[in-house]
Amino acid sequence: FYVFLLVLSRSHALSFYLFNGEQRCLLAMLPIHSTGIGEYSVSGSYGVMHVNLQVFRVVDEQVLFHQERITTGTFSFDVDEPPGSLASPSPRNVQVVEASALGLRHAPLTTSFDQDVKISLCVKGYRTGASASTAAKRFVSVELEGHLITNTKNSLREGERLDKVGEGLARIEDELAQLVIQIDRANSRANHLRELGERTKHRIVWTSILAFVVLIVTGLLQVLHLKKYFQKFTNPRRSSRNSGFSFKNRYAYA
Image (cartoon, rainbow, N blue to C red; front, side, top):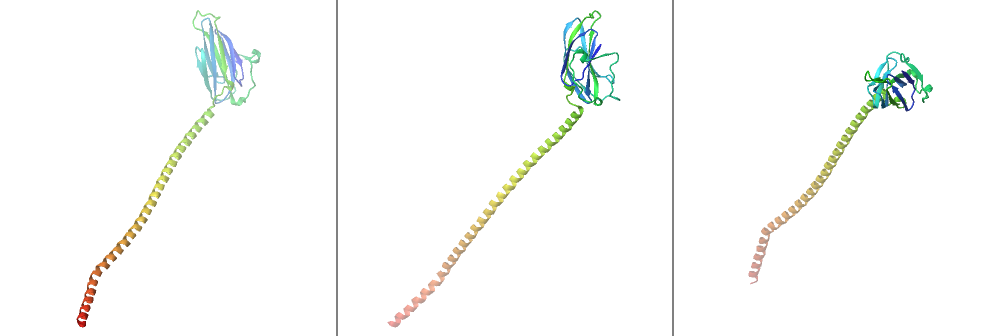
């Protein structure tokens, strides 16, 4: 089987006929702790044949994704750091064909090799029965997104940390909002008590003034009443004296 060697920096799509018993692989260098995504499509049916898809890490042949009898869909896999050295030889008993020799487009490597891991994406056709024709083939299309990176694990961890920080900030914001509400209520109560105190003080002042006026008026009325009362006892004596004097004088003149 063949291996198409590609170093991807943007979206690429490969379409080819896959024959019965044939396996074709796509090699890519992906950064450590990245996530690769892609799409596949298998159409046409010339004879009885199915297609399997497998993605593995070349350095230790660790399977990252495996799907049997693929038709149309998407796939994703995480690129973890392999144990030991990152140097990865080509797969055993596999003929490596440069992409330029096949007339395929390719782009220069954009990341350093000491931070990348070689990934192999392979599709294989197989017969479903002993009577299947060896000439059976399927039309396979594989597309890989540029750099095959969606979110690195470090970014995910950073995102989780930022989410926690965001939750903490949201909680603090809620607490501050509640504190502001409580402060507003306390200010409202203080203003209400202040207004109530002012009204009470005014009522007390006016009540005191009214009571003082009433007291003065009552005192004056009592003084006038006592004056009239004592005048009743003093006026009759004066009148009797005056009447006696006039009587004596009258007899004297007579």
